[in-house]
Amino acid sequence: MKPFASRYLLLVAFSLLLGACTSSPPVTEAPDTRGPAIAQLEQSLASNELATAEDQLATLQAQTPNDPALEPYQRQLAEAYLRRSQIDLQKGDVNAAATALSRARALMPKAPALTGEFNGAIAQARKIELDKAEAALQAAETKPAAKLIDPSAESTTLQLNINDIQQMRRQLDAIATDVVNFQCDVTVQVPRIDDYPWLANLLAKRVKKLDPGFDLKLRKQILRNVPAQVVLTPRKS
Image 1 (cartoon, rainbow, N blue to C red):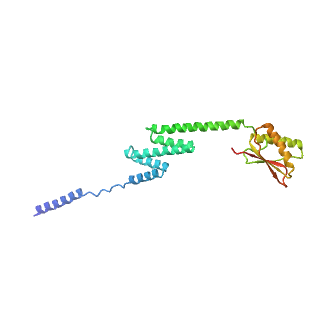
Image 2: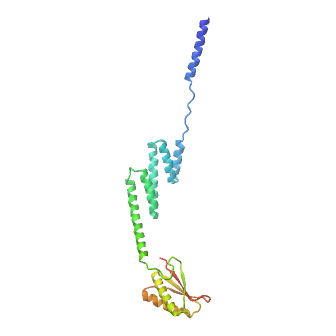
Image 3: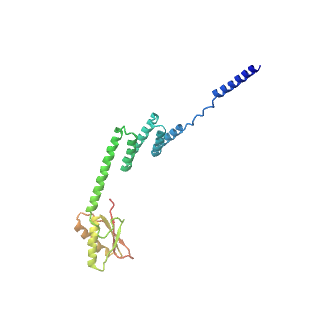
């Protein structure tokens, strides 16, 4: 009986060992993080949050390099940057348009035809900007310096020295020059009504001598408590 019992126990042990070897623990699947990440990318593209979308796309591409499933998102992002470039260019923001175009080109370097048209338009816009800046600089260099007024101010008030005729004449000479050079309207403020005609006449003669075709606009104000003075207001272009 002993040999039989020993064989029986050996068979049981072998069965238990075999069962332990064949019953492996269940495999736990890794959580799907790619799906939510792609959903966030799609939401950023739909919201036109291009910088955020670009960062999200770069993260996905780093996790799975050369994944063809990400190529449509890359192209969609590049096209969104192209649209932004076009809008910025229409608004006259050349720098922003150039920045958006550079992002589009970086995202699809193998498709230069899609960016070539915008690139030419931006180059033309930059040339126009440079031409305008150069013209403004030349105008500033050739424009005479102001004698009495502050050209950047809304208006300049100048008190007349009517007690010193020679000094007042020199004042009126300088005022007339500024009126013509900076296209000023003139308000003559005097404490008495009788003071206005002769001051206005003296100034008008000087302006006409400098520029016979100048459209001098004179306005009278009677202010009892102020000395005789003129207010020069450059015309807005």
